[in-house]
Image (cartoon, rainbow, N blue to C red; front, side, top):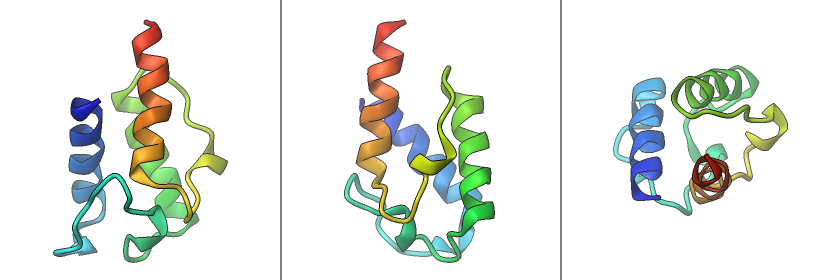
Length: 81
């Protein structure tokens, strides 16, 4: 699961350079990312779907979703393969 977290974290840093020094942890909510809005959610969804073998529902990428929740969701699917 650490590799999933690392890939998501690196993707967030690439997609949202304005994040600055905000620490990204499993408890970081997507809404804490500066300028996170519906367009940012679509960009994150595209990144996740390009890097993991699954579809991510857009409604899962809301301001209250944590990075840890994404890791768990992706981890369940990836381990089944």
